[in-house]
Image (cartoon, rainbow, N blue to C red; front, side, top):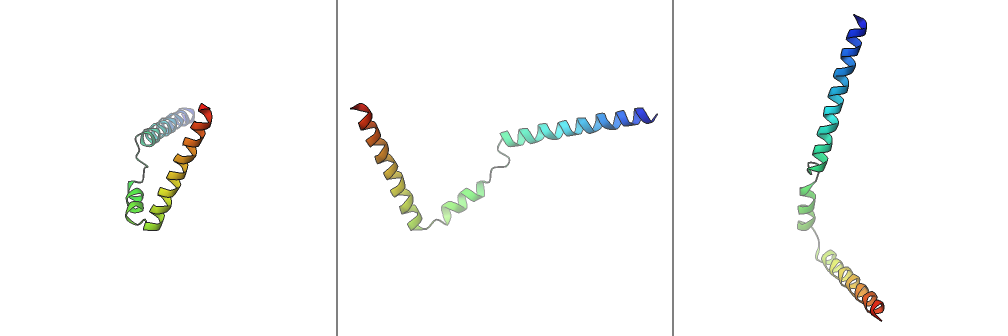
Length: 74
């Protein structure tokens, strides 16, 4: 009787744990944990200086890539 109860409890526990693992994997793959409000708040509260710095950095990266491509073609 005790063996049957322990076996039943073990099987139910494993089934529930497996279900929770599958639900977690599904939620992670479908983007349930993505924080979309963080992105929008970042856009709303960026200062003009931060945006100018980002543009300068992007332009310097593009320039560096173009110089690398020119050297590779020579």
